[in-house]
Image (cartoon, rainbow, N blue to C red; front, side, top):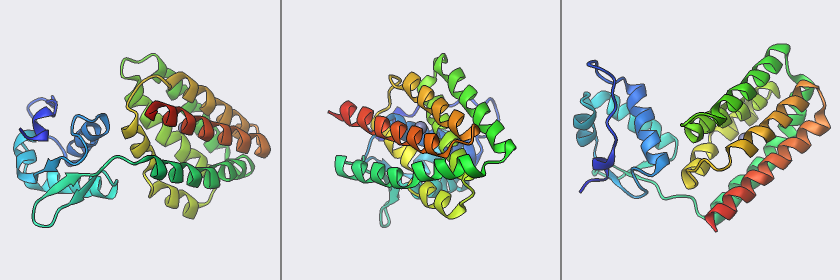
Amino acid sequence: MSALDQLPSFDVGSRRMLADEVYLALQQAILEGTVPPDARINGGELARRFDVSPTPVREALARLESDGLVEKLPLRGYRTTDLLDKSQLGELFELRLLLEPGSAARAAERRTEEEADSLAQEVEEGRAAMSDDDAYRLLSRHDVRLHDLVFRAAQNETVRQAYARTHCHLHTFRLAYTGSYVDATVAEHADIAEAIIAGDAERSAAAMRTHIENSRDRLMSHLG
Ligand SMILES: [Zn+2]
């Protein structure tokens, strides 16, 4: 049996799926574990399953490769990557603790009015996700946007890009695909946003540090 047999069907009506939709559907299946680690992925088989031409599948696989969710096998298509182990996870959180509290402090000092509004709005998105049936999937997207907004508001594109390249949200969500931490996460995000909007650098850094340490501890205890 192929790992791709487990893929859910995607209802896009009578039209063909777009490259973007193929990418998001596959990414979701990998994050949820429907397509498990170390599964072979064959582009031709995928194209048949999604009923699309090889081009959108090739584009989707290239994007998943840059996400670190699949890797190319010489002459044999792709495989899904392994899950992060505890020591890699520890390193990722160490990096976040180096980058994010400082960025939150800078964001408090440098954010524009528009960025303050976007942060407030993003917290509302997170609150709306809490009561949704699909809470965890919505939360994972909200989490990516919230942290990216903080980096943008810090006005340091180099730091923002360095962080984005780790795709840390994808990899941590893949490790613990569960809805149990939604409320705590949204409450911590609200604290961070409030401090940045208030222009309080010290409180912003502290709220971010608390959030990252709590996220790390929640994930580590989930992994046992
Ligand atoms: Zn977060």
